Image (cartoon, rainbow, N blue to C red; front, side, top):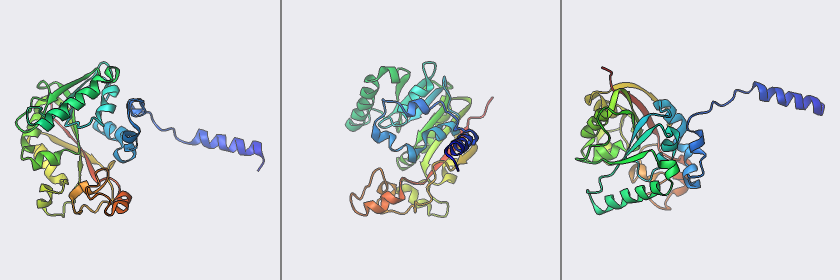
Length: 266
């Protein structure tokens, strides 16, 4: 095949190939405000697909529950834009000295980049502290790999009630959580870091939510869910240190459910 024909053939393939649809999150995900280490986890956490599944759009009012170091905050804040609001329901600084330090580090991160985080309002969330946003103000509440903490801390039912109260009628609750297979013992949920979808759904529905559906965006079939130190054995934590690190690196990050609920409308 001649070079001109090859070139024409390559051009025809390029034209025929379906374009990858842009999302409202692409610019934020590629932003210079994100570290290379955080960007490296995009392949495991699928932020654009996950937030799209939850229906997050610019201009919304969103509550992010337990943002920790702000991995998702880095994407949500700029994606929501100047007409949107992000309530970052971080830990309660009154709970402990460590909690206070964690909240301050998060606030320092926001203050260092006001052009990125100007629409973020920090609120307190934790056991006994549920004033995460004005009642009925949020279009969506989202939380990532946190439900097990609320469950292990014995305040998950109250947490779901707080999510429900913050949402507008018709608002969305989006959850990403380490998934425990349904055939595993319930007792594993108390110390493994994994939760059953059926139990997450039970708690959400008890608070008044309606189940919309689940996605396998963040599924990992290599995850066997049975490690010496629970889900924290896997990356990025590597709770066993260098022991079997290559094996756990090959498995990758945990198998996760990605679940969507809605607060019924009036």
